[in-house]
Length: 276
Image (cartoon, rainbow, N blue to C red; front, side, top):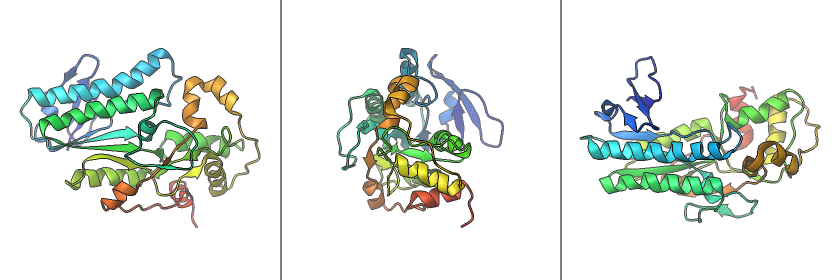
């Protein structure tokens, strides 16, 4: 096992450095490696989507993938599998009653376009006779950050509220289930192609916000934040929040994956360490 990043990390795991912008990578990073887990990419919700930020979001994914591909092409290696993160943003966002499967078409908005191009870049590894798995990740619930931390903070402060209509679906997944999916993708050599990495039971934004408040035992009295306010504050990024999609994980279930967290209340209770 080894780690590849922008800086060396101290610890027992060997750490190597790459510079995607300069197209530089330590070739020692792939020595005696069987599987590459590709998670690199600028956070889509970290900053407002200016033209520069959109370019960073795209290039961090595409160029890092291209650098890994070129490294394997130019060097002797033992890699047999590439497991790459992707996102449910592949399908685009829009309130719908229909569940989306891996066969559903890609959307046409910014995130859908970036995700589609990212997956196309990852698919190039198959030309090297490597097994490729792409996990289209939903809204990850984790106590260490991400969407849940952002949603829970105003609730903890007593000012939590649904966003937009509150009826937009949220296809969530507990961080532990997501990690288990990556482990399965590494170990199960029959897996290949795209898999939706989202839980069994999507909820609406209103239901998720209400459940966070109930688990934290906090009041939820504030009215929903209007979509136009979110648009003013967040710009184009607001569409990711005020719209949603319902994702089917049936394919990965058929591959033998079993979820630990079947409903959002149990997931939140675990993450907030609430004693039942």
